Length: 151
Image (cartoon, rainbow, N blue to C red; front, side, top):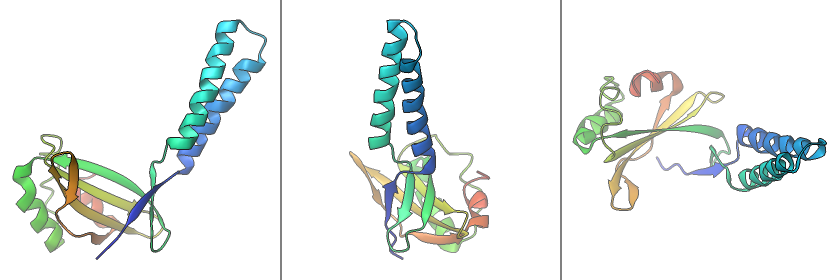
């Protein structure tokens, strides 16, 4: 299965950016000292920069459905176990104990509560980038906590 996800601005990104810029504008509007006004200008500038560059949501290119992404990192020694677990579709909860003990593998999980689907793909670290080492697997969203160790 070939799935392509692109980064987009989520609602949370917009709320954080606009509230930061608004708080800065309020600090400038208040009759306070110059140092508080400088903090206000900095907050407005930070809000605008966040609005331009902060993208934490993901969207499926074909369907337009929005997803949230969770990344987990594992040691290279777990590659065979993770691949067999993904292929068989039977999670053994082998991931939780080894998570964070290495960065040779990255497991990306894209979840969408509205559609009830989750997509999982395993990546391997090759110097300077992660390259896919499995195809994208589609699961029911209820299966994801079992697959990722309850998270």
